[in-house]
Amino acid sequence: MSESVPVRCPACRREHVYTAPSYPCACGAPVAPSLDGTAGPTPVAHRAWDADWVTVSCGSCGRRDQWPQPELGCPCGAVLRIAVTGGVSAPPAEPGPGPDPRAAFHPVTIRTARDAVTAAVLYLRWLGYRDIRRADQRPPSGIGLAARGLVAQVDPTVQPASLRDVECLWLTAMTEDSGCVYFSLAGFAEEARERADALGVPLFVLDFTGTPQPVNGPADELRGSGA
Image 1 (tube, helix red, strand yellow):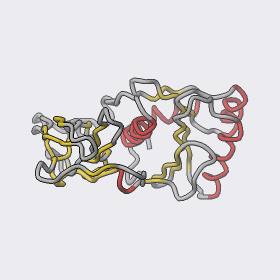
Image 2 (cartoon, helix red, strand yellow):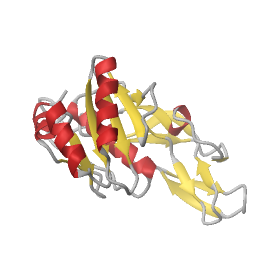
Image 3 (cartoon, one colour):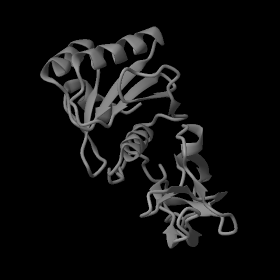
């Protein structure tokens, strides 16, 4: 069960109670970072990829993955980063022969651009990709992710991804001799979908439940075969 800690906003001194969110491990067990109730929150002034993620071990299977750093939004406008101890909170897995890591995908609701990136990372892990990180090359729009043998682009904006966006992702993948996949919150322009079909680029639309929906043949194939 996720734990809760008291949090005082250093900007307005308002008191809150913060509960750590849990995320599904590939083994099926819910995993949540262990919160450090003795350390005060840190206001977030600037975003950095390394600071936005924390490595947590699953208490059931021992798998180590990166999950979003716990944060709290205060009504005064401050965004507070909650300290973690590095442990986990997770119930033991049910006994059995071992769960299928792709038996079910557990999404996260998308409310912010950060949630969209989290949803894409979770889905890539569900497909079987590991060591997901921020891509070395920044895409023309959205956020670039990379894993072994794959580059991905997440576009959390309200504009459909364009033909240029798809072609730039494909060119980046060709340069790095890897596959690619595109996640968009607002969908894709018609010419972008046509070009993606011709180039074999999987396209997924992120719905607000956090479940990527395939919108072309390559995406259907990737969902079926995994990494």
